[in-house]
Length: 82
Image 1 (cartoon, rainbow, N blue to C red):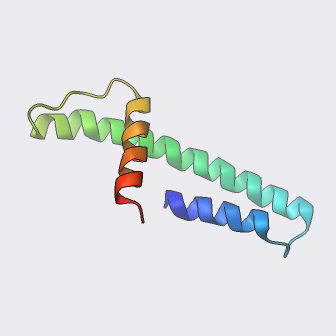
Image 2 (image 1 turned 135 degrees about the vertical axis):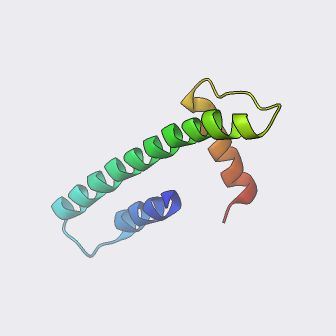
């Protein structure tokens, strides 16, 4: 989902189909949607890591901030990327 939003933003930037004002509105809306999706992923990821994974897998430590979850997300995207 995150990748699809990024692709849509890139396509809008390269497209000449719409006028400048409409493109700016769509670009701003897409960036806002991207930030909202990222925040949901980060906070939900931290919750699931701390409340589910730490209880199920011994030896895992709780994440102290969303920045650790962001780093994990980036690492997994690099390793498993599409």
